Length: 254
Image (cartoon, rainbow, N blue to C red):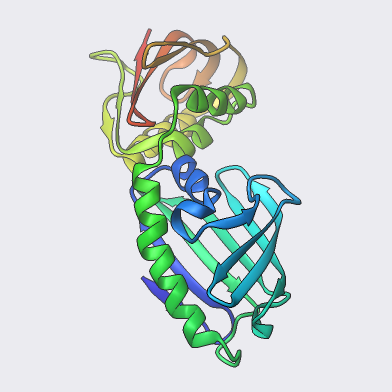
């Protein structure tokens, strides 16, 4: 849905694709907006788009992987575009990925506001949404992001960035600790509920993630004191299945 504030032009999207897919799609500008002259992949890159006699030149100002993209408009044949900023903020709410698009400095008082609004609604609601649903993501891209987050013990960020909307989380049958959950929000709640039971953290060891076929495997040992269980040691193997560029299940063996 589109939303106009009294100040900056703003559009909010909710999509089923992962933040990784959405972020990758945003940066592939030629495939959802229009063909560009220049580059848009790295901070400092500049690119120009053209619509007939109209041109708009941008500089990539900020790239936070899977979280945000910011472009500064440095030159344009349309005066109201110059020195405006185009920003994409990516987050997760429930099972869905939320994209908050803001064209900062493009206000209802701007001369080109109405045409700008119509254009952005079309290109974002149609072009960007379509591209995010079909853009290819390799297993290696998922593994690279998984490794970077696992090293930092950012397990909830792994869920946010890489898990599919309908992901499944499976513990051993009759596990006294956790059970089964399905759906991104439910899987996240399952993990948070367990973390909330931890009264004291004594240490953990995590192996380097490895990939075989469409699976990522990680060995993990934890020494914790948990509410209702006392001090326990969990020695487990965590197995993540990848399908269509997303993690579709996590399974724990202990």
